[in-house]
Structure formats: C-alpha cells, structure tokens
Image 1 (cartoon, one colour):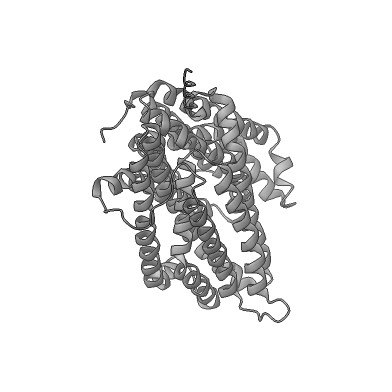
Image 2: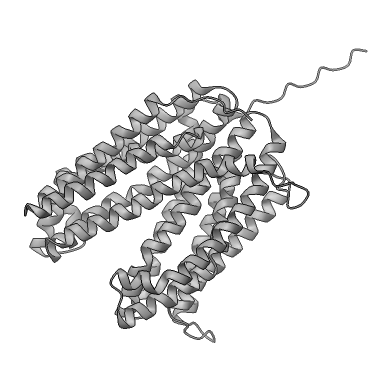
Length: 455
C-alpha cells in the first residue's frame, strides 16, 4: 500500500494573503485598544479633576513625560521588538525569534529600571522648569514618583505585547491592553478617590492604578507566551545573551526613540510659541490640535499592523511585497486623516463649538483648522510610513523627516515671533511642517533600499 503523501505546510497568510484585507484585519483589534487607551486619558482627567485644581495642574506637568514613556516603550522600542521578531519568523528562524524574545525581557528590565532612576531623580528639577510651583509641583511629584516606581511593569507589558505582535497576532495583545485600560480606570479611580473601605490616596492612588493594571497585563502576556499557543514559547532560562541579537532590536528601537523625543519636543515648542499670542490663541490651538490627536489612534493601528507585515516579508526575501504593504497602509492613513482634516477645514466652527462659546477662541480654532487641517493627511502618512520602516529595520529616513519637521517649527516659529506675525501665520507653519514630514517620509521610503539583513 502506498503511504499517504504528507500535507504541504500551510503558508503564512501574512506573507501571501491580499495586502489591503490583511491590513484591515490586523488593524481592527489595534484600533479598539488605542481607542480604549484614549478613553482612559479622558476618564483619568475627569476623576483627577475631582481632586482639585492643583491635582489637575500637577497632572498636566507630568503628562508629557508619561506619554514619552509610553511612546518609547510601546512605539519606539516596541516597534524594534516586533520588527526583529517578525523578520526572524519570516526567514523561518524560530530559534532566533525565541532568543529575540528573551532579549526583549532583558531590554524591558533595563528600560523600566532606567526610567525609574532617571525621573525619580530629575523629577523635582524638571517639573519646576516646566513651571510647577507650590501645591501643583507637590501633586506632580506625588503622581510622577508613584508612576515611575512601577515603570518596569509598563515596559514589560508593552514590550511583551510587541513580541506577540511580531508573531502577527494582534488579537491577544489588543484584548489584554483593553483589559488593562478598564482596570486602570477602576483601580485608579477607586484608589485615587476612595471607595467603600478603601481610603482616598489622591494622586498616588491614581498613579498606582496605572502601575497595577500594567503589571497584571504583563503577567497575562507572560503566561500566554509561556503557554505554547504562539508561534514559539518565550524562554526565561537557558539562553545565552548575545549582543548581535540585542542589537537587532536596539538598532531600530533606539533610533526610533529619537522620533518619540522629537514628537514631545515639537508639542512643547509649539505650545510655548502659541502661548505668546495670548490665551485665546492658545486655547484655539489646543482645541484644533485635539482633532489632530484623535487621528493618532487610527494611524497607530494601521502602522502597528504594518510592522509584522513588512518585517515578515523582508525576512522571507520579498522586499517588493513589503513595499506594497507600506504604500498601501500609508495611502489608507493619508485618506482617513486627510479626510478628517478637510472636514475640519470646511466646518471649523462646528468642532470649536463643541468645546467653547467664546468668540475669540472659536476664531482661533477656525484659523488653526483652516491653515493646518488640509495638511493632516501628510502627518498621518508620515507616521504610518515610520512604522513600516521599523518593520524593515530602516528607520533613519523617517526619523530625519521628523527632525526636519522639528527644525521647521523651531526656526520658523522663532522668526514669526521675532517679526510680530499674526497667529494664523504660526498655524500655517504647523501645516507646512506636516507636509515636510509626510513628503520627507515618502522620499525616505523611495530612496532607501529594503532587503534581508544578514544574520
């Protein structure tokens, strides 16, 4: 009797399935998780407001630093992790992928402990430099110290989620991060405001909610990675640390961290420059840019899905598919964010009146959306191509595009203030800088060779 033929191994759908449906399938869970994260920020602001004005002011001082930690761990270094793991899996090298996951845990340990030491040490001077005084500074330090004592939990959760994304699995990390968001609201609100027998811990309780939720998320991800349900089992012992494996993550993640720093610095510089035009201009800028920031979860969801798609294609030696995925995702981000920006340009007062009835603030919001709104698409395009470049391990070009945006804002804004221009000129500069960022990212993708890196 003739033995039955062995079944052919099933091809990885991320490597062979149609690109657009694959992006949509991978992006949907990410979008849900990102929307939940944005909702947490709104809820947290609401119950911190119940603690008083000083607490709100203190949180505002710490918020950029907390966001920087999230961007560095989830976006920058997390992208480096997903990129390295997906390229190894695309090349069929399971043992390398396992070793990369082990090195991810080591990087999380160093990153989390390093952030704790840094911001507990420099926090008082930093928040005072940002304008913190008296009760607001005290509340800022209470919140900051509690958050950064537990920085390791946040780094572990975000980087382990990136390992799972590198496998091409977006459902598991998104579901766990959804649970983390819900726990953060419940635990942070309960500890911050007090509930039943739980005393009111104030800002320390709010911060503890974030740390506890992310710690539980890290444990859940660790259990899943050890369960054998993924493409490989995360090893915790028996792996010899190797610099070439760690550097495969770090050479993408470390450079990408520059982009995170640039993003925060750009916001701080813009806020400082616009504030010189008065409270109405600053409030209008804040309301207008809020529409811009609401688009980031959409772009992030698409961009994160591109990391394993591009990475696996590069690992499999299919650079052409990797580029098609990058251009397709970039076009999606451009159309969605650009469409919302054009809607803001056409109907700016509709958006402004959701937040204020002050005629001066409405006029400033309308000016911002009129000049910057039509350029939102270029920002979404640039951000999405940045994630695609992470997947390819070629991130320098998009980072340089971000540098160009920062330089345009800093030098152009200084010139506008020095020559006593009107606020609309500053808002036009913001739009022009977005175009520079998007066009620079396109140019970087166009001229940078993509291909399999040597092992």
